[in-house]
Image (cartoon, rainbow, N blue to C red):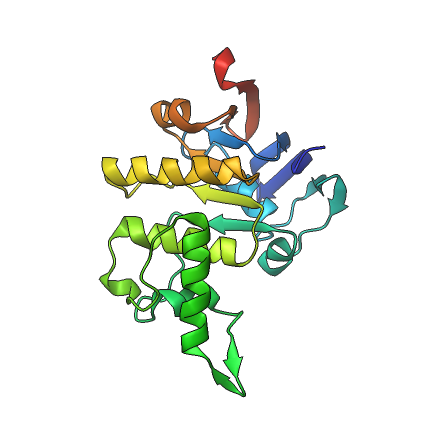
Length: 226
C-alpha cells in the first residue's frame, strides 16, 4: 500500500493545463523527488495534495483510502504537511508560539507559554532538531527557520511531508544539515516529497524520482536506475 496515490490528476487555469492526467505514488518511508524546471507543474500538484487547489479531474488515495482534500486543514488531519518555499512563520513571535499556533496549550482561558515551550522542547529532542523555543523567529538564520517549519509539521503529527524547493535559500552547510534531518525522518517511516529543479541534489537525497515537464509526468524511476 502506498502512503499517497494521485491518479489521473488534471488541473487547468483558464486555458493553461498545469497538470495533465498525472499519476504519482509515494511509498511509506521514502524520499521522493519531483524533478523539473519552473512551470513543470510540480508545485501545483503538491498544492492539490495539500488541499490548496482542487483538481479538475482525478482521484487521491491516502494509505489506500480515497480522500477529497478540500483544504489544508483537511490535509493536516490526514497527516499531510507542506513546508513552502517562502516560510509561513510569524516573524515577531517566538519559535514555540509559531510551532503550536492553532494548537495552543492553555491554562484556563489563557495561552500557556511555559507549556508550549516545554512541548516544543520535547518534540525538538525527540526528532533531534535543536531549536530554542523562546527565540524570536526574526532573529534566526534561514536554516533554523526551516527547521522550525519542519517541527511545526511534526507537531501536527505529519506522516507525509512536502518541501517546496527546500534548498533554494540555504547555504551548503545548511543543505547538508537538512538532508541529514530528512534521512532520519525517513528512517522512522515518514514519507518525504521534495520539489526541486536541482538534479545533483536529487541524486544525493532521493530514493525515487518523478520527472515532470509541461504538466506531464515523463517518467518515475528508482535512483539506482538513473
